[in-house]
Amino acid sequence: MAAMKIQFSSDLDYQQDAISAITGVFDGQKVCNSRFTVAAPGKGDLFAASEFSDLGIGNRLQLLNDDLLENIQAVQLANGLKESSAPLANRDFTIEMETGTGKTYVYLRSIFELNQQFGFTKFIIVVPSVAIKEGVYKTLQITEDHFKNLYTNIRYDYFVYDSAKREQVRSFATNDYVQIMVINIDAFRKGFESPDEGAIDLSKNANLIHRPDDRLSGMKPIEFIKSTNPILIIDEPQSVDTTAKSKEAIKSLNPLCTFRFSATHIEKHHQLYKLDSIDAYERKLVKQIEVASLEMGDSHNNAYIKLLKVDNKKSPITAEIEIDVIHNGKADRIKKKVKSGDDLLEISGGREVYDGYVVNDIYCASGDEYIDFTSKPDVIRLGENVGGVDEDTLKRLQVRKTIEEHLEKELLLNPMGIKVLSLFFIDRVANYRAYDAEGNAVKGKYAQWFEEEYKTIAAKPKFKSLFGEVDLETLATEIHNGYFATDKKRIGTKSVEILKDSSGSTAADDSAYNLIMKDKEKLLSFDSKLRFIFSHSALREGWDNPNVFQICTLNESTSVIKKRQEIGRGMRLAVNQQGERIHGFEVNTLTAKRKSRGLAPELDSLQWLGLPL
Image (cartoon, rainbow, N blue to C red; front, side):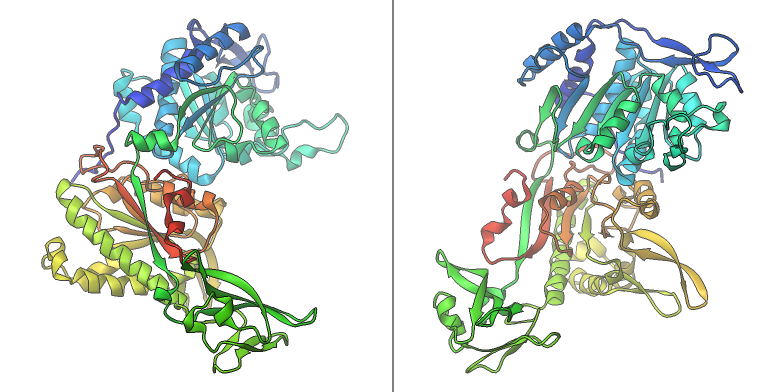
C-alpha cells in the first residue's frame, strides 16, 4: 500500500495574506539579479575580474529605502498594524503566526513567490536547534510535489548546511536557480571576526564556515554566502539571535533583508502580519484545548502533611511544612512555617482532619531530620508526607486515564479515517527503557504500567469494535515506542547503544529527530500500529503531528514556556487517511493531562498555559 501523504492547500486566505504581506515589501522591484566572479583555483580572490572558474549569482535590490518604507507602511495599514516610521532603520521584518497555523509552509511558499515576482534566488533559513532544522528539512521534502505543481515544475535545490560538506556553498553561490540553505545558528556563531594580521590565529576556534578551505580555493565558505546577498528567514528568532554575538553573526551573512517568523517574538522589527493565538482559535485554525488534571489530594479527607525543611539556626527551631488550608471557602495546599506547640487544626483554618496534630519535636540532625506530634503516631521525615497520594500511583492513574480517553477518541474518529496518536512527556528515559547488567534492554516502569493498563482497558466491552479478535497481549507491546537520544556505552563485555536523557539540543539527539521525522507520515496511517509516543525532551519543539490528540505530562515543570512547547506538538488540525485536513472543534480537541499541584481546579484553566479558553 502506498504511503499516505499529507495534502497541502494552496488557497488558505490567512496564509495568502501573510505571503502577500511579504511580497508587498518589494512592490515595484523589477526582476533582476547580481553577478560576481568566483576565483579560479589558487587565486583566492572572490571578486577577480579574470581567470575565474565560476560565475556567482546573487540577489539584487533596486528599490531605495524610501520606496521600501512606503511599501512597508502600505502593508501595515492593510493589516491593521502600527506603521513603521521614517527613516527606514533596517530591513528586518516580523511575521507573527500562532503554532500550528503553517508558518513553515508560508515562508517556503514566500520563497517561490519572491522568485517568481522579483527574481530573487538565494535564501537561507536560520534555525535555533537540531529539532527545528530537521522539521524544516522534512517539510521541504514533503512539499516538493506541491510546490512543483503550483509553480510549474520550478527548479530549486535545498540542503542542510553540513560543515563536513562545505563545498555545498559553491553550488549555492553559482547556480542560477532557487537555492535554499537551512543552517543552525551554532554553525556560524563562533569566530566570524577575522584575526588581526600577525596576531595569534584565532580562526582555529572559529566555526569551519569562517575558516579558509582548500576545497574552495583557499576561500572561506562564508565568503561565498555573503556575496549572494541572501534573503534570510529566521525561524523562532527569540531562540536564534538573543545575544549580541548572534546578532553580529546574522549580519555577517550580508543579508538583503531578514524575515522573522514566530508565535512568540521578543523583538518586533517592522511587523508585517499578525495571527495570534486568539485569532487562530476563533477562526478554528488550530485544535481547541481542554486540560484534564488529576488531584494530588485524593478528595482531601485525610490529614496531608509534608515536611519541606527544618531550621535550627535561630531560636525557636522551626520547620516548613505543606498542608491543606481553608482559603476562600475551599482547601488549598499551602506552605506554612511551624514551631513546637503549634496546632495544625488552627493553622489549617479549622479542618477537623488535623485535630490532634500539635507539633511536638522538630529534629534537625543532618540526614535524620523529622517532625512528630504530641498525640499522633506519625513521624514525618524530610521530603516525605502523610495523607498524600503516592507519586507513582498518581502517574499510573495518568497513564490509565490517557489510554482510556485515547480509545474513546478512536471510537469516534477511526470511522472518519482519522488515526489517533497520544504523546507522553516523561522525566527520565530509564523510567521507560532501562538496561540490565548484560546490557539487554528491559522495560522501565512507565512501559510496564502502560502495557498492563492497556490490556485491561482495551478488554472492556465498549472497545470491542476496535479490536475484534486481536491478541491484546501482543498488541500492547506493539503500539508504543519512545523517541530518545542515543549513546554508545560499554556494559559488561558488550558495547551497546542505549537511550539516554538529553536536553533536546545536542548532536546525540539527531537519531531521535531523524527517526521521528521519517516516521511523521507513517504514523498517520492505520497501517502503522504505533499510537502512543514517549519522549523525554526531543519532541518539545521542531516536531509536530496533526493527529496528536492527547498530551500527558509525566514530568515536573512549572515553566509556562516549556508547557507551551509541549502543547504545540499537537495544535495542528487533524488529517484523514488521504492526508486531507479535517476542520471543526468536534474533531479537533487536544486533551492535555497533567497533575494538579494544588487543590483549586481553576489552576487547570487554559490561561495557565497562556492559551485561549
